[in-house]
Image (cartoon, rainbow, N blue to C red):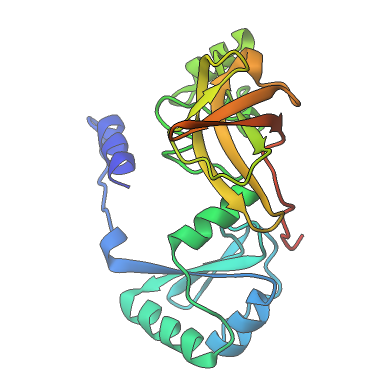
Length: 243
């Protein structure tokens, strides 16, 4: 958030614009999973069944959206700290859902191939490198970063984000080296877990473009050992959004 605010301040300087950063005044709850719709309506009393995926609405003093970063159906609810605390207590006391932290969220978003800023996206990893160029409308009016994206789309990128499935159940972690079959470093892991949904050790990694094709054999160095793997699609488990 601090980086976003700093960027907005930089590019609004000299204009008659006032930035009012209100993040400290609001909280967010994410209710995720196949029963999310029933739980939100029954426990919190917020009508939400008509919301389609990736849409939002205002209900009184709150905003509710049918979004989330788990690959499952769910809702994100924004309101005051008082509202957020009371809603949290209601959800836990209902016994119809369980609390979880960002570690749980991270494994879920990873399994369905959703990138995380700081891991699969950063100031150095562009949407083109991450395989997300379909979400960048390069034929629209000018925007910050457009020139760089157009150049990458036209001329290619030196590295690409891939999925790697390991033959062993060792767990690759962020920053671990990815090697070719000759033992040369060709990239590094961005996120890795033992994927419980499919019982496989997998990771996403940024590798040199020539090693990014499906079925390319690669290796991941985990501490002092090297484990063989193969390039696969970045989505290891299917999403279950409500259409």
